[in-house]
Length: 31
Length: 165
Image 1 (cartoon, helix red, strand yellow):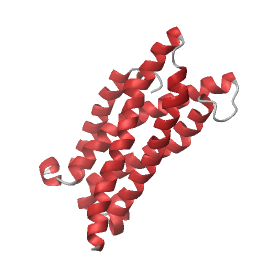
Image 2 (cartoon, rainbow over the protein chains, first blue to last red):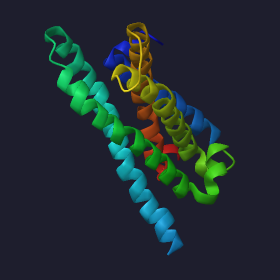
Image 3 (cartoon, helix red, strand yellow):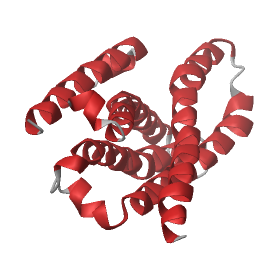
């Protein structure tokens, strides 16, 4: 957590990953 | 009329203040942090520290408050439907609201108090400043990360049929 945030590229990458995870959680919950 | 104020003006204010908040967050992460790193090599960062950062932080932290309050106004009687996931129609905005709330917490509890030490607005030893710099930086980066799903769910909330249909 502490180290990957040092790179802005990784921050954006994990932001997209988190988006995909949360998207699938909500999509599943709404079915 | 009340609906116009809540859902019309409220939404406008939420978006305008949100643009200012997240715009400045991206300014810090994409512009100022790399600029300060470069300025550290030839000692030219004093102007940013003295004139730019305090002003940017002022608009940043108050825009965060206005964004959250306008968001709460917008949710109105559905505030708990969103935050407690009580109604399917509010699942998407509920995720956005939680992410925004965590980000507001980071601004006021982690970023601002530590920035006050870094900028010399409150007394701090060099050791305190080094620690404050790290905490403020990580909290700011975390908010940049969280802004990505936050914006996704904000956009998706008004169009659940397209995003989750």
